[in-house]
Image: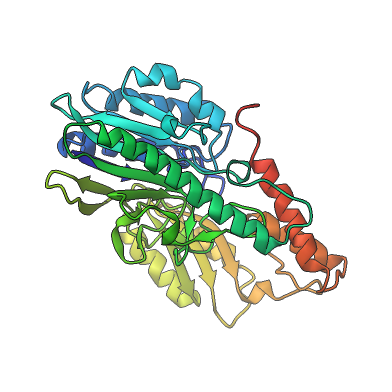
Length: 409
């Protein structure tokens, strides 16, 4: 059995207000070709298929057209689990129909562990793989709130709740495994933040739980899982040095901070019993560049890009000593007649802190919601002693807004 692990597509996400549908379509076309050339048996998507709970019609079109193309092979399976950006009810709505196409969707945690266990048949029609299809576990799925709890008590209950959920689903998978007449590997999914996980600024990774990102240790996962396919972090990486516990990362860069990363999907081959894990680089479908320096350096770098016909989206970090109040005009002239676009300009000299202590050219695009709230606290002169409780309450509100009850949607 060959499994291809991917996650964090974020279909429908814009980049500095630029639509990215062409990029997403190019990626999905490439992914279909990879699945066919590698003769993949199971495609596993570990959450954040869409960027929002109300994806656009175009994003939905790309999703369903892709599933149709993958489902052409009668022996190929797709397993899709919900992430924190996804609407669980939206993902689950067509699942009974999709099941007839060997597409298995688990949008939210089920009441019965059995419902998150999927037995995949191989090309010979016999069971070849068991998937513990565990989606993003929402707060209400893993703990019961009690009055007067501290942040530490809440986090401990959430960690224990995640541990218990994985153990129950894995035990259900082991029971199914015991009924088979041959050894079958067990893989699991997850959409969460593990300890030591690497991120970059501006990658859009949201807080998952009240008060923190809740970094969980490897010990919350059962030791005997043959491969653990994780989503949520956008940098491809292994967890704790283990080759069989991995984040595939996002296939497209979410911000300029990810521009230099090599994106990937992960091919896992169970043909020899022990899984062989091979990351496969994803091509760059839209060049992103961050250029920094004084004006001569910027002018030179832009000319080099222009001479080779680049169509890059560019972030400029001006670090010259002169104020360069006409910087935008110079940049526009430098890229005129090329396919390049300058999406963001940060002029260090023009971003001197004003009396409020904030950058003149800073916009909401540069901030996350918690940053805005903290600026509010600054503006109101809220004392250091009061801030932790207010920030905790604010984060709880934000998480509750993101976590509508999927069964009530």
